[in-house]
Length: 503
Image 1 (cartoon, rainbow, N blue to C red):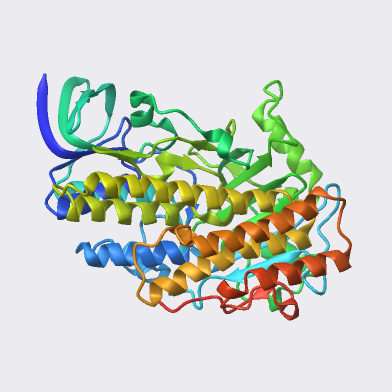
Image 2: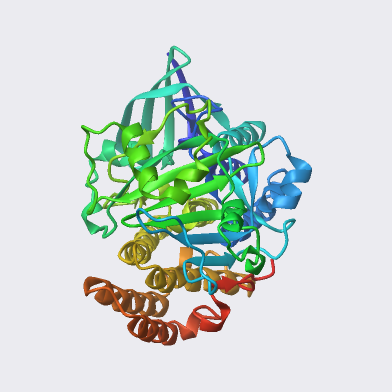
């Protein structure tokens, strides 16, 4: 049996785990990266955001990772790595559908919402084809000296005392034991470390209760073209609505679309499980087709679509939400996606992961042997808890408005108020902020008050237009201290062109 010793072992070689490993290797730690599978492997598409790009850019510069830097913007990505799958993302687009009805565009865009995240294509955010991106990150980690162990199944993870971990693996068919003084869990839902340590789940803290059906497709039609054929005023849009994290809001569900340059489209249906619990007697293809059949304009986009060769099937999940009750110890830590997950609404996953990576590597760089390390790791865990609480609050408020698009717009603006505030504070010199400024009590409190106001309305009967206008004005007044980009301006007709903070 082979034995190897490291300072840090990172479990999981997705982009966040691989990035963490290469940064720690850069600052002088001896690092191993372990994954039970081998790249490339399927992972559902994800969407970057201005926050993600800001953090990623700073990490690449701070830790001398010049080969990663082009991935911070669409233009430089295409120039440097056109072979790594991605798509152009100019912002966020939302469209409200009614069951059994063809989408009817409104002259005032009452059932549309577009929020610009980039001023130009070159400086734009990106859609990440994770199979390509993860493989690139993992290979970069190996090139920097990280001991990468793919096809390495963990048989036993033993924690004999602080700073004493043994990981018995089966690596490429042969036994291997890794010894390390610190373990980072980047395995996502697998939760290898918390399961080993017997950490309790606290998913009951989550208000959001959703499940998903998703895959990658080829031949998905253009929603921009569909809108034009339906008489929509796409000339009013601040950007091409397909070049976005596109959200189709249904009654009790929402459907995402992320389009890539190679013709693939990542699409998935996220269902409010409190309204539509999973029925295992209905197979996944039948359920997917049933949902499409209720929304003819959405179904039209999939009329000629086919499942992509990878994964080659629809994937259906149980409840998406998960959370662990302890997120870090004296010699271990969970990256955000392993610590918990709420919902992909508003595309916060990449940014949240990168914020966590930034804080954790600073601790393991600056306080590796300091007696303050345990305290810093505890604070790291508390911050992720606050982030997950805030994400859940914002997402649950949006779910409660499904079927009332005017209210959804109000609820969605809370997320953008928090996101643009983070961007502004960071660009003014703030660093290592919590995602969405979740570490700032005054911001959390005002967002929570606004969410409560929306929830109180959605718990009542459907609101009249006068009542919705009252709620819009009330929420606008609540978020005024962090509304620097004109959110909830009724004169803009849901078309937001100028929310971008210069990078």
